[in-house]
Length: 340
Ligand SMILES: C=CC1=C(C)c2cc3[nH]c(cc4nc(cc5[nH]c(cc1n2)c(C)c5CCC(=O)O)C(CCC(=O)O)=C4C)c(C)c3C=C
Ligand SMILES: [Fe+2]
Ligand SMILES: [Fe+2]
Image 1 (cartoon, rainbow, N blue to C red):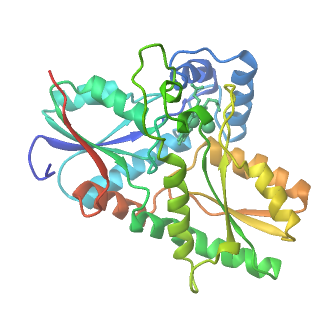
Image 2: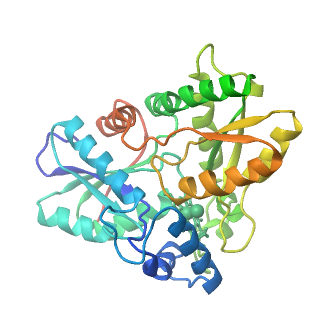
């Protein structure tokens, strides 16, 4: 699919986040596919979002996830030089269904959909795919399912990590390890069989291959580690953990950040630099989970915690997305014609 062709456009897919605290219960019901969250979970999340600046009423600026996603879309549109770039969110406005309807009105017939979640999982990318296909009947959709091993994406992360790692080593007076992270997923997600499908009901098609997500997340981390100068990281320079296990019950994959921080302390380190390689911009799992909660855990253990700046408006990230969209980077792609 060429973007030079009139009728084709890029659709960036993102998580979505509420614009004010009172929207939390409704937002969470979107995240869980309609399952109501217990009141204490709603309250806890309101508390976390309040700590990162979300207010009772919409602020002058959109929340960070919305703001940076829109910035990335504008930068991508500029970098591509041809065709419009749309943004659709799965769990909040602008919803994927509404944006695809607008694309149809604008005369778009071919969609190149790219998830702003580079590692492919049934619980993230799989749900974005389902939402796009439900909305885009009769349109041609080229759906990019995974771009975790993009060298330019790794370059974008390394560019943010290098300065803070050098600063940490200088301040600590010793080599400080890096803890790369990605969002955890429920253990059932990475299983095969019917139980692996989110919200599986009898008759749900059986998944006969494991979810690629944990392997892809660690591959991204490894590619970033290889790009650190001088000479790339050795095995002892970096760790990997899955962060932000959910509050919705059942076991989620680890190792957790909390256990890994304890292991890093036990090995005699005085500090750690964290870099989440599954997220492309600031949002609650970075600004609260890392900057507030994990920093407090680390401090209680006697570790100083630094964090690499998020990619946000990184031109190198935009270059990575250009490579994915243009086909210069061979992403995992599902090409489908959605029947009318
Ligand atoms: C690969 C998997 C996931 C990614 C990446 C991810 C990113 C992400 N999540 C939030 C905010 C929330 N996610 C919540 C629940 C939740 N998240 C995932 C998976 C990924 N999230 C799952 C499987 C679930 C459980 C869904 C269910 O049916 O219960 C929640 C709800 C509260 C909680 O359980 O923690 C929030 C809030 C953001 C902002 C984000 C990246 C941009
Ligand atoms: Fe999530
Ligand atoms: Fe989460």
